[in-house]
Length: 315
Image 1 (cartoon, rainbow, N blue to C red):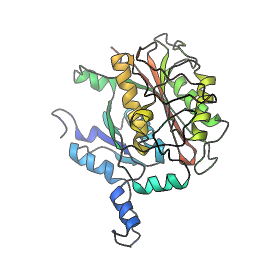
Image 2 (image 1 turned 60 degrees about the vertical axis):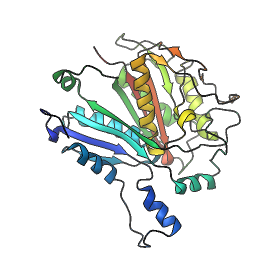
Image 3 (image 1 turned 120 degrees about the horizontal axis):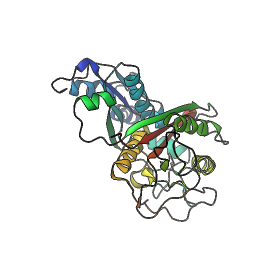
Image 4 (image 1 turned 180 degrees about the vertical axis):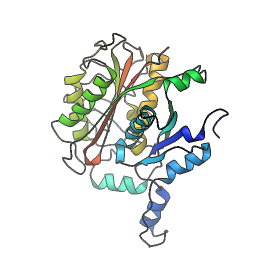
């Protein structure tokens, strides 16, 4: 329940999922669910969590495929900036789904071995499952409650939609570059690796890419990163835990927050021989942070793109 002194009407929930109720979808698939064709909204994910914590503010669920939790985090920041909430429970959750696996396999987008983003021998993605949830609050609220540990701050967000194809990214990468530029500009961070922020507080230290391991996605994203953030080291969350669908952006955001907090970029899981078309630096060993900001990308079917910039926590 919400703590003493915290107005439950000022606590919101913004969560996301791609598949929603996996049991229900699989029940339709196997014939175990009633053949009513009843549509099941994804909203209960947010409403249940809101009930657990007594959050009486906005309770909303975002479900635009694999970019969903990135949008949920951006929505959470907007709720705070607009004065709708002081605290927002935000992130995403995804359960392993045989339906999603079958659909991606039909598209030829499943790697039979493992998720190998940007690798020459990659053959698709591999699904993971789990939940990643962050608590966002205004700086004034954190100060008022005497917060002792703050892992980072959401400094910028950029959305775009290329509307090019139902499943394939637009080959030029124009719209994903636009989302990155907007997020970096909002955060006041120079695009080039190590470039100082306009405020002089530090530059871009790392990128957590979307990088699914699929053929076209990795090439398009790497070309944009090579042009916009050259030499900035990448950390691939999906190479470690697989593609968590609607929760992928939140897992990336959580990883970015921990990197900023510990000021260390962890080593990447080995992916094998890098693809010459994917000129991105995947560090093989851990390294100290060289900048004060991290860029997170999340893309989805339908051309939904979002980039988030996270910065070190303010004093």
